[in-house]
Image 1 (cartoon, helix red, strand yellow):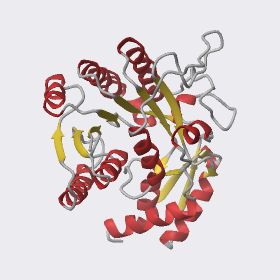
Image 2 (cartoon, one colour; image 1 turned 135 degrees about the vertical axis):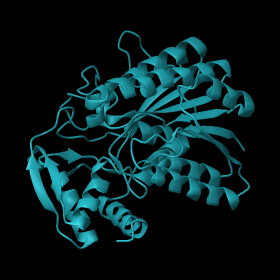
Image 3 (cartoon, helix red, strand yellow; image 1 turned 180 degrees about the horizontal axis):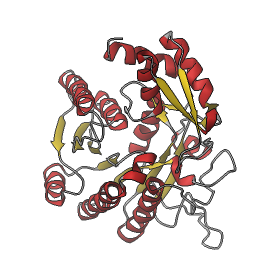
Length: 341
C-alpha cells in the first residue's frame, strides 16, 4: 500500500484516477483549490463519488482544499503524509482561455508546478508523474505525433506552459535524481468531463436546442481519448518510475528519454476522427440533431491531432483502445442521467 498524492483531485482526470487508486487499495491524498474556472458543483459531486468509494474500501482518502502556489500548505501536506508517488494533474486548463487570461496559466502551470517540484526534491519522492498535453506539438503537421518530434513551436500560451513543465521537470530529474514521467494527453472525454470542453458544450446545446459553434468549418480532426484509457495509462505509470536511458546518445539525443530518470509519453486513442463525425455520433446517442454554426478556426487551435503511442505500450504494456462509439455512448448516458435530461 502506497501513499499517492494527486493534485487536481476534484478535476475530470484527477477524480477518475483517485477512484482507480482507491479501488486498488492505495492511500490517496488529494489536493484541489476548487476554483471557479467552471461550475464548482461538478467538482464537489466528483468528490462525493470519491468519498463513497473510500467508505467501501480499506484505502485511506484525505482531501485538502488548496492551490499548488500555496507553498506553506503544500509543505505541510508533504511533511504530514510523505507521499511516495506524486501525480500532478492540477493546472489551469483550456487553450482559448489562455488567450484571455494568461496570468492564470503563469501562476498555476508554472509557479504552482515549481512549488510542487521543490517539495518533491525536499522529500525525495520516488515517482513524479505530471500532465503535459498534445498541444505541445503546436505547428507540427506530420501525423501521427510522436515523442521524437520537435515541440519548439507551440501556438498557445497553454501549450507553452506545458512545454515549460517538461523542461523544468527534466532539470529537477537531472539535478536531484527525481524520476519524472510526463504524459501528453490527447483530447480526453467521457463521464464527469469538463463543461468547457466540446463534448459537454455540444451535449448541452443540442439538448437545449441551441446552436453549436463548429470551428474551422468542421475541418478539424481530433484524437478523442476516453477517460478510462487515460486513467489506465496514468495508473500503470504510478508503478513504474522513469529511469535513465542507458542507450541515450547525447550526439543524437532521444527527445522522449534522457541521461536523467525522465520519460515522455503520448496517451491517445491513435484513431483521430473528424469533428463532424463526433457530433453525428453524439446526435444519435442524444436522439436530437445539432444546429451547427460554422466558424473559422480559432487562435491557438490546431487542425488535427493524432497520437503515436508505441512508447507507452512498450513501457507499461498498455494501448488505449476504447472506440469513439462506445465512449460517446457512455458519455451521453452519464450526461443525461446527471443533468436529468
